[in-house]
Image 1 (cartoon, rainbow, N blue to C red):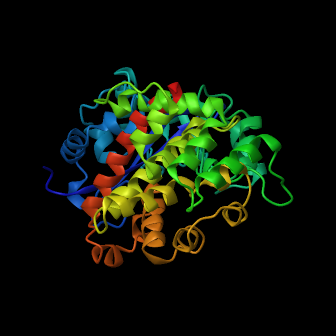
Image 2 (image 1 turned 135 degrees about the vertical axis):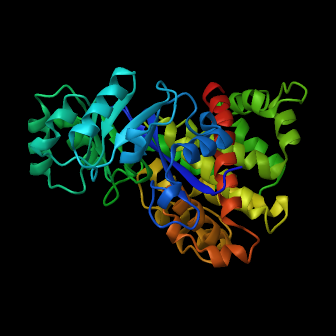
Image 3 (image 1 turned 135 degrees about the horizontal axis):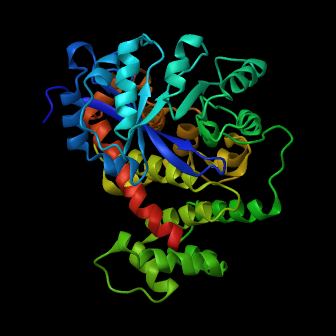
Length: 408
């Protein structure tokens, strides 16, 4: 084990088709104050190596490269990371002197990919621009004219442009039009349009199905009938329960068999998940996000409630980004669904235990660890270590299940 517990989260980096190209690893020592920098003398390659070996970084990023911030110390004494798995991010506050350039050149010659983080153009960085592969521009720090000016300044250099802190779909499209080919930020989690936007007929079908699935008065036979009315959903559900994610069970050959095997609560959850993942024009990562949130909410709930009751938390996490799926305000969608008051209040007002857990999951997802109400969670037997374990277990689970859902 490491001497110091490290909190870890990931943030996806997308290509122009909003497919995951890589993940940035966001980390902080437990009890520290600065994200992505381990406190004091603990910022050593050995600490990072030990932490990543314990975590099995492949579980976090799967087959994608991992971007990681390198301090000056790490650049001058780099750990023996796999050059094919890691992208070295050079922090913006590092002095751009000859020693740094020599070491960056050595890393580049050794086969590492180099990215300049939070880049603001200054001619002193020209030597680094001749070495770097990727330049990350914080688009929240500039207005549109300044973003465009930076794009022009960087044209003479053979670098890939990455727009970071892209918080809206409008900014994504603007940066894409300027020639950025990589994008990082939470725009995917937000509705593309809200005011005056009507849900198209194709999405209304899905929403109506979700509404029926959430009916608290529905019996198992009712849910089976609802699913049977959608032949595609029926086939997908049978395929899913026969996948590796449900290994160890005998082959399921009919919808009735699948429904009876799963039970009422689980069949509602899986049918909801399959319906969302099947929505056209929505990136797969949105479904992965919903699955990860749902599982993390459930795992945390199991620290203080029964497995049966924790299913409510799973459902809450699963429904928490419906606004991004339907491009309509969440309150408008929830108003049309027969959810229990505690779930509705947890989703919209973030009140009660459900709201507390959902807030913690959303904050952890964005590496906003200081916004997590640790004292309140402690009363529910949830420590920071349990938070991290739940997050990592959820990612692993969502990765395995996501593959099954895609092939269902």
